[in-house]
Image 1 (tube, rainbow, N blue to C red):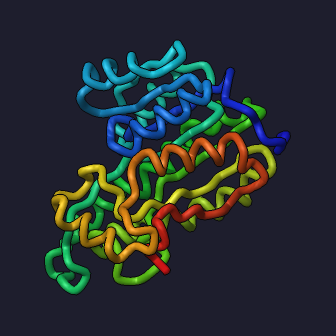
Image 2: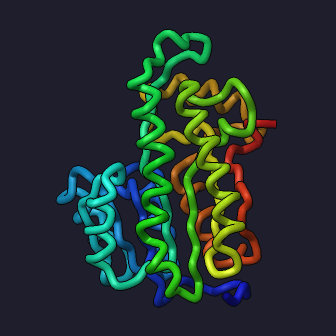
Length: 248
């Protein structure tokens, strides 16, 4: 692999899971603006996402239905495309439960979070690795969480545990796949995407607690992924925390 910075992503194909979420869409926009062909993997609202793809610069963008928790779906999705240079794992979910309230975190809830936010990431990487192996610019970006950087953050203990697992996965696979495939994590904090139903008052309060005096936007995360793909190419196994200093 050549680690020289690139001017753009022309000729590259980016596969994004959770592509119809706030962060997923922002990643699609940033990578498309840099010249990448977008393949969005979603499990609902296909027509809505197709309309979104039509607004992106470039050509050849497409949407594929797949549940990232279902390996057969992932294999079927992979077999529909001919290339994958950039894989962004952005799918996942959670809900707010105070960390002290462990009684509310049932076994079923914990397992659901682990499957959705951790095991699905591994399954997606395993499925698309044969295509990444063929790329001269192979990159995996796992969308993790800044809650892994400081205890007490995150929507609940199951969510934080799953994202800590993503961080361990990133580091171990970066070492295992080097030098042919780079693997990094991007860790957002307090991104106003509607991911959690706190309301604007919550985000206003978080802005006051953030050194840069605002919460992050999906576009901040999209810009980080684009930078890693184009300019920050001599890096692997690293975690990029995009939080405005919130975890300091």
